Length: 395
Image (tube, rainbow, N blue to C red; front, side):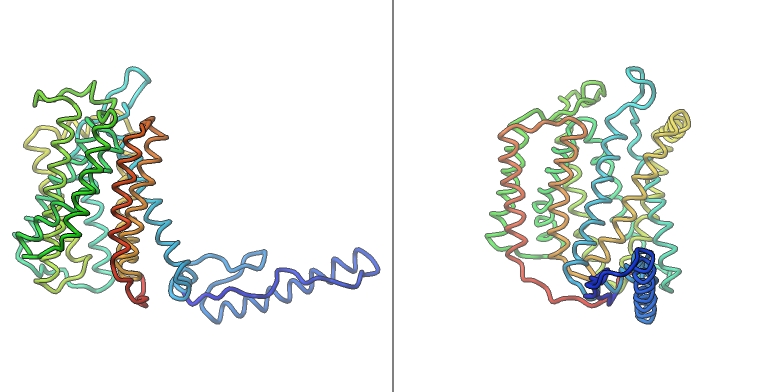
């Protein structure tokens, strides 16, 4: 990606006026064509691809790789656009599937089978990880004990199911903001599993994020529109039950990320290898759960009755898989600091987009809660040491 920006102008300025318009146009075209050929030869030697019809380099994978290696800010901007774009689309599709009925307006049916989304999502991710491992020549034999992969898979399936189910009872902005409080269970699990210790500043920031989330929840209506339609066997109110689901998500997701970190430290494995086995078990667990709960065939029947639904689920899974590759490349290329900044920005953008597209107006107290949460997160990021500029290649 050692692409370099040419300093040569697009067109030369002609001082002498030619005798006729034909001579001028002909000479100007010949000069432009000569410059274009020379530049194309120069770019071809550097492996940057061909030029477009206006003399600029055509975008290609090789050109993108060169750009990421030589232009730090352009590379970060490209990765940020990829992560924010895919995950904002993921959030829109997630909310559309779980909160908007399929079928004729006023007579549609809601999709109720969260585990079916998990099944397709994990299956597609597993297939992608398998192909990646084969292409890269990585071994397919399990490195860690199978029960270790299975433990992470179970917690991941439960966490993801809670995340989808919560959208039936709370709004997407509430769900997204609640995810920012993930640092609390991660710190708790880190203390128990990895025997980590944290500074008082980190505990203060965790409390600030939790306080900001609480302010957001208490300042406005947290229940989603579909919560009035979907009944719950728990007997609790919509937003209260959604809050319990998000607590379940935070607890299990915190365990998932902490135990994944322990796997990386205890065994020599690539991220693709770990994803392969975790999603393999997740696919199996999701399938078994659907069969035992007698919801597999109703879910299949639903997507056959409403083909738009399966298209949305496949698009959601595709954006999730695509984002994982961009995330992996961002962390490998630019480090966790840049990635954390991008993800925090993505969460804020997702809340704004959801508020606009799905009519979730925010009141003053909720804006203040957002300010407290994201201000604290950016402060936490700013306190980290800036990593050295990486030079590794994208996967």
